[in-house]
Image 1 (tube, rainbow, N blue to C red):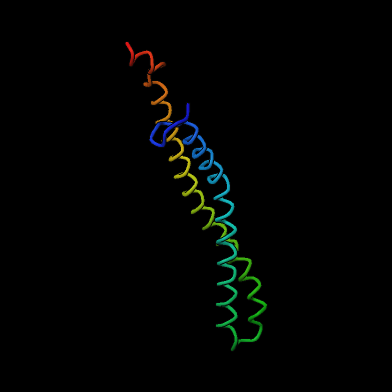
Image 2 (cartoon, rainbow, N blue to C red):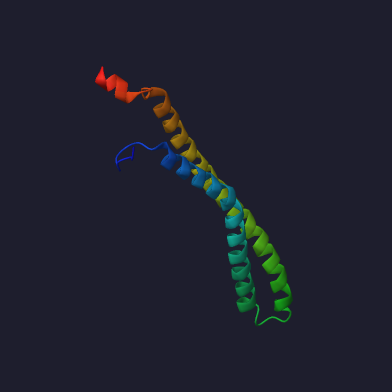
Length: 115
């Protein structure tokens, strides 16, 4: 029997839960890399711009890239961790709703409706 658009289908929810968990797994790493790159570039640009009048400023720019990247990775990891926790919580809420539906739905709705 084909499902109508408005009928409950646990497979749709399970697919969404799986997607949330996959995203939560990768988000921490992706945010850390993203922020490391951004802050490394910003730090290099700031040192290069403000250090033009000083000699040897470009030597310190490389250190700035490293420290900016490290700081960016830490900030990104923190933001990614918070996002991953929210995604996992959302997945757990959906799983809880699915379990409630499984435990409260009659085993055979056709037989109970005909009785």
